[in-house]
Length: 234
Image (tube, rainbow, N blue to C red; front, side, top):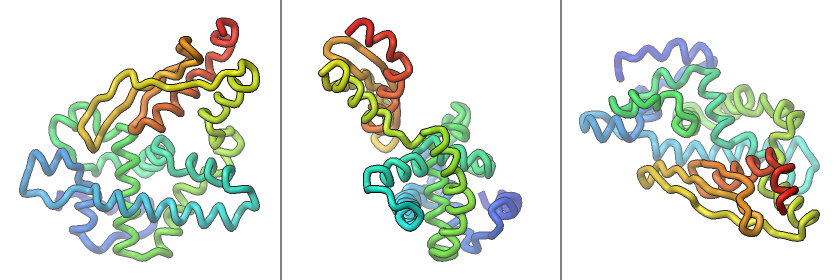
């Protein structure tokens, strides 16, 4: 990992991280450490820190920018910090090419998996915070994460699909949808859930995600995309 040239990444983000150990840790996935014990710590602790810092900075920005009620601000924040959006950020910065993975994870396309790229962005934010401080973090998040806010609003990507699905089924059908886990796979720290959304006994949609909540939202979005089908059958 020490031979990796981070200069192109530093040029893209506009600054460098001086602590080489911290930088290496940010780009080291657990699988690589499991395969090679000589590697330093993996990036999950930095991911934990970066997640909290990202949420704080994003929350403060939205609080100052909008006079909207809490629910709307929460939806906007969720759209900005959700995994697929952070994965887009990682791809824009070509961060996946620096990610240290096990041979097996690399062969399976780990460097382009949404959840790994999203975790990487959070770990990188954690490293920026420790190495450069909060102001540099604010600048990074503003330039590469918050910059998509107008697009998210224009495309209504901040609308909570689960809430919208429930409003429709309750308002038009008088039924509250429920969700059931179809499949649960992966290691404890990298779970994948497949969940189905039901209206009574009718399966209306299905989705997957790295958490049950994320999978439920994806399932609700799938149900909304097939609204005509289940409205006719309900």
